[in-house]
Image (tube, rainbow, N blue to C red; front, side):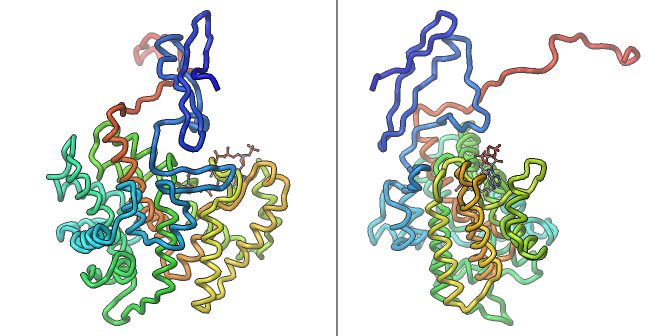
Length: 429
Ligand code: SDX
């Protein structure tokens, strides 16, 4: 293969260096296109555009491959924990026993939020969507820990913020849940590890002690591992773009939370259950809703289906579907929405519209079934995605800020507005 791609425009020639990734993924660098040819490229949604080189996550949408730092997601989901996977993503390798214990102990040490932050919860109506309060609380951490919001944080300072965010996001999410149901906050416990501590803060109460089960803890571990990173998705690209202006990590993550909230992205897990409940309430006719999803005049979309990258099965969806089956069997729960989801998947995967467009279930299609079984309220589903994605956001922000070639993100545009127009005095309008 040649070393360059040649671009010839208006008699000008630009040699664009070809970049080849570890797995043979290819790009050509157009960094000199505008200065050489006065042209820019146009790629709405960036479906053909690479924003960076990254060593964190590799995915192959055609083959349904997803690896964190080279390790297949299937192995991590089966053998790892969310804390260990977070270390892998952020530090680039699996920790040894001593490192893992120190990392886990740091989460225990930093699990409390500043007591004054409790007042912020009072400022929110109990009906607020928890993604609104989560984004605000994470950005507000910069006010409570100002010593860490330097423009060029040291490695140690980044590590400190990373542990704070990963640990305190649990407490913030659990407190916003307790606020929404009018119950007293349950504080983190030093004797509980990452996931059990979160579940306890969410569901324990003085009158109804939470009965933790290994099955629920394991299912939550698997879900958090599977959500931990996914290369340049909308919210991670947001974190990198905001961070490229040298905004601090709290502000960058807060922006990522807002991007994730959208129903086309992390909000889809909530939208899937709302969709299934609507279908169930209207008789459960999956073919009627498949037809609606195909009808260009109908705004209905099959939520939890389709993906910008996966044009084959989303490997996470396969694992989550099995995890949902296993957990509901172990808990003795029969959720009619799971049966309906399976019927919907079976009907869609036989339909030419979905086959032609390579639309398969994505990570969000079955995850809500598990959250329901655990007792997570519906509007907290995107929050669960945010907790899972936190290590990925941190890893990408750190990779971006430590890359000497990083420049502030500032795309161009093609202007299609009014030509030069003079100001008209108001009496002439
Ligand atoms: C996540 O990027 C990531 O990595 C994201 C994520 C992560 O881990 O960070 O994987 C998490 O966000 C998963 C996706 C969750 N969103 C949903 O489930 C919402 C429903 N899905 C779609 O809105 C859509 O599939 C997207 C947003 C996921 C992808 O959109 P694209 O790549 O821009 O594709 P498109 O909208 O251009 O669709 C291509 C065609 C269109 O039809 P035609 O114009 O060619 O006739 O497929 C159709 C679309 O109408 N289509 C759907 C559909 N998804 C795409 N039709 C019906 N139902 C759907 N769900």
